[in-house]
Length: 347
Image (tube, rainbow, N blue to C red; front, top):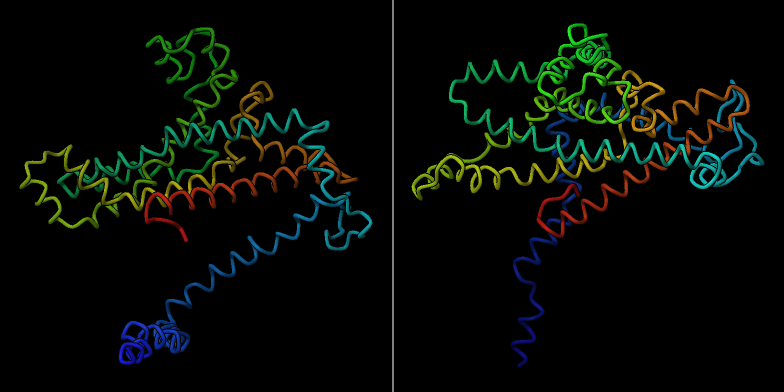
């Protein structure tokens, strides 16, 4: 019995390794940094950009909790008695601005959700197609053509959309895409003549389809890189078991890139309430505010309407801050779900 107690007091090999790791943890990390100092030097510009354009502007969020700011006066210089707490949040969600805010919030969620449902699988499908092309030259040419829309300016892209869907007095003078849709019976002649982009019921479809065309090819880069990383022995084993192409995609490719899909989905959920205002501002009209007005454009209008008192600036800041908080909670929640369901998570 005494012998067993003595052996219990002797630390095992795993405990000794853990103690040694904890003892020299910081020393080993410092040596790694010194060894690879060139790589860490390349991080300095990125850290500088994030600090100046992401962290320093955060003090402007104080506008959402103060009575207002004056032109030429910093937010930090506003008197403490101007602090109004959550007044702008209450006014935005339950007061005079509630109808406009909830309409913008609903439109933001609807556009992002439909974009996630219809747009998220497209880059994965494109990457699967690229993987099946045997000719490197042919695949490279196709990849360049699918990546190009991402590098086109938003102004140019929206101008192309306007030209494709332009208003005309008859079929021949309408945009080429409107003409094709009328010929196929998918669009009425009255809608084409009055303008597709002037009809609220068509705005979300135009926005989502143009977004898929713009970013699906560029988004396939991540998935194609993950597919390339799959070991060829997995394909050989599947072929020996009699698996055809579809079976290989189902049992080899998709499980091999599942972790990448999970990470990209979590990141996409974090942007569920952050629809960029540039494209919406260039596409929408007052006639389409019913379905086109999002939180960012709503905040931009509020921020530009008030010149002196700054009350609308407080409402605009409150709207943007609320959407950012919800986006953060979505990332945390989706990451927790992914961690419990699978072994893949951001942190």
